[in-house]
Each structure stands twice: as C-alpha cells, then as structure tokens.
Image (cartoon, rainbow, N blue to C red; front, side, top):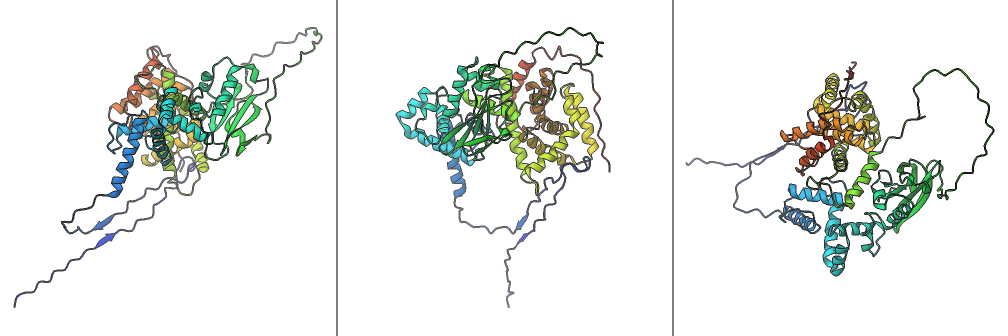
Length: 544
C-alpha cells in the first residue's frame, strides 16, 4: 500500500493590536512645576504579519490611483509652466524643481510658500489655466497690459474673485498693487495728500494690515494713515483709519479715527465694522486747526533749589512692539507685486531680501509646528499659547542676550539650561517646534526666539537662521547686523556640512542667497564690531 501524503495549506495573518498611545502629558515636564502640559504622543506603528503570497502568473493591473495622481501632477506642472513658474518637464513627478515652482506660485499669490499645494491652491491654479486657454485675444490683451506678464493673469483672476465676481479683470492688474479695486482706490486717494507715492505707501510697514476680521475666510484690509507722515490725515489725538470688510458682493468700507491700530481693535459682522473700545463706527472728521491760545501774563521768576540729578525719562509707557504678522503681510504683498522672491541673481537690497526670508521661515515654522500641535490631545491652541508663553519666560535672559552677545556666548547659556531640565532631547525638540509656531501665530516673539534657541542648542543648527533674521530686521531683538552674521554663518555652515534643511527644503538655491545677503549686510562690520562685555547667563535649576 502506497503511503498517503496529505498536504495542507494554511494561510494566516496575525495582526498585533495597536497599543494606546501614551500621552507624555508635558511639553517640558518638570520645567518649573510643569509649565507646559499635554505633549505629543509617540504613536506606535501597527505591524501586520502575513504569510507569503502564492506565486501566480496573473499580471497585476496598473494602479488607477497612481495613474490618476500622475495625471493630476502633470496638469499641475503644465499650469505652472504656463504661468511662468518653471516646473521642468511634464512627467508627473513632483521633484524639487516642481516644489520650487509651487513655492513661487504661492508667494506670488500671497499664500504661504510651503512647496505643497492645498486643494484650493491647486484648483485655482488649474482653473485659471483653463480659463486663460479659453480666453483667446482677451487673455493676450491682459498679459500685454500687466507688468507681471502672464503671472498677472493669476493676480487678476484672484482679485476678481475677491471683489465678488466682477467682469473687468484687466482693472485688477494695472496700478492696483495686487489689492482689490476699492482698496487700491483708497490707497491712491491717500497718496494724493501724502509725500510718498502710492507704491511707496503700500510697501510701508503698518500702512496696510491684512486679517480675516469678520471670520468669513476672506482677507479683510485695514489702512492706517498714521504712517503716511501727512498731517492731512491726522490730528494730535488720532488718524483716519479705513477698514474694508469682505462680503459676497465685494468690500464695504468703514471709516474710523484711531492711532496705532491693529485688526484686533475692530469687530466686523459681514461688511459692517465697529471699534471694540466704543462699539460704534466713527466717521473720520475733517481735520481743523486748533484755536490759537490766549497768552497769559508772564509771571515773575521764582528761584528754588536745583532738583537732584536724575536720568531723564521721555516715555511714560513702553513703546508698542512692532507686529511681525502685520509686517509679513506687507512683505508678502510687496513680493507679490514684484513678481516673486528676490534671488541671488536679482539681489540688490540685502535688507529687503532678508525681510522676505524672515517671513518665509516664519511660514515654514508655522506649518510644521501646527502639524505637531494638531496631534496634542485635549489642548486648544489658546491653552498651548498660554503654556508656551511660560516657556518663553524661562529663556528670557538668553533671548535678551541675543542683542548683546555673540552666538557662541548665547548658546553656552542655553545649553546649560537644556542640561538643567533633565528632559529627553526628543521631547524638548517637539516642544520647541510647537512653541515656535505658537509664538509666531500669537506674535509673541520672545517665545518664538526662545524656541529657536532651544532647537539650535539641541543640535538643529539650521534654526539659527531665525535668530539672524530677528537681529538683522529688528523684530524681537535690537537691530544688530554685526551679530546677525554669526547666526547666519552657524546655519549655513551646518547646511554645507550636510544638515537637513528645515526651511525651503526644495529650494537649495536659498543658501547662496543667504550667504551673499548676509555678507552685504555686514560689510566690514565683522572686522570692526565693537567689543561686547559678556553678561552672565543664569543657570536654571529644576526642583524635584
């Protein structure tokens, strides 16, 4: 009897049940009683074990998902190339060249230049391409009349959309500075009674502030005439302020009298706005000269003992800190008007180039930090901001030292603080990235700079670029180009040594621009920098 062999095939897959992520429950656990709570959990990856698949001669069908994605990428590359943003060959592969083209498109449109398109940005780009293709002679006329060339089509289509779907796109191109028609008209009106031209006013920090005041997802505009230098728009107490609130039918103008305005001072419901402090709109009254005072009899002089010597104080209160958020809105507007970012080849003004790069790094920091923030369980952005503010306070002395000491001396103090925390570097790094984004979003520059210093101390030297920008531009620190050079060099040397870029990873040409601009900023300042007396940096200890 022949032996009977029984073959049994068993296919089984074992799925390991994912373990619940354990919340770290502290950004910086132990930092002065646990200032910052609820950190990002390290999510374990689900592992799936499967038996090897049986060999078969059946050929797999091509992936329809990959094919569709490739076609979408080709459409994006075609549109980018048409509008003058060089994405290279239309192959459906979004490499560094395509990402650089996307960043150029985003900066022209006033979006955050992340190199990654949102669904809205992609839809607008593709839709604009098809519209331009179907426009015929009208498209050619618009391109010819725009100083931005074919890129001006995108600006025109955007402005038309923002103005409530009007029919005259060409009016949005010439002389409108990338602004809605009604806002541009107000700029031109103000310029007629001011020494600066309309183009110069648009570039002035604080003249136009952008914000979504009425919460409808569209940009609202605040024009502050106090920066024009013209007495026509201001009296001794206040200046004319115009708020343009978006509505489905366009923009509505609201006039006020105020001084040192911010968008937070106004509350808008659709197109109607009111100042928060008085609750009612105030029309800007005509400026009338004050009556001449009646002279009083001159009293006889009285002689008294000389007062004790004292340091004069000409300010009764702290000056209002400049808003980096508002400044970057203006920079973005100017960059859009100029047709894109300054490159190494077009570099003429180092300060202007570094202003653009400061706002670019801010955009990247916001994007990456908010991605991490979204993973925090049970904490609102406001709670994160409050806790991160305490984090900034801990490194206040080091942030202040940035304006006085070299980068090496500052980092010694920060390094001692990091060691004193006893916290794992990976946890501190996540905390710092979150607080960097939180600080920028709330315009808390002390917190943002403290977070950047922490990241540099943890070995992420490319973040030193942030400190260089704050010093060269005077935001959150004293304007010190001589000290900024050291921070720029620290970041650029790290990149040249192979460090992973954190800002504009798809734009390797940035390094050449930063190196050239930093040298232009410094001139001979590096050789003739004044001797700085070293200040003692406190060492923070943690109580058990």
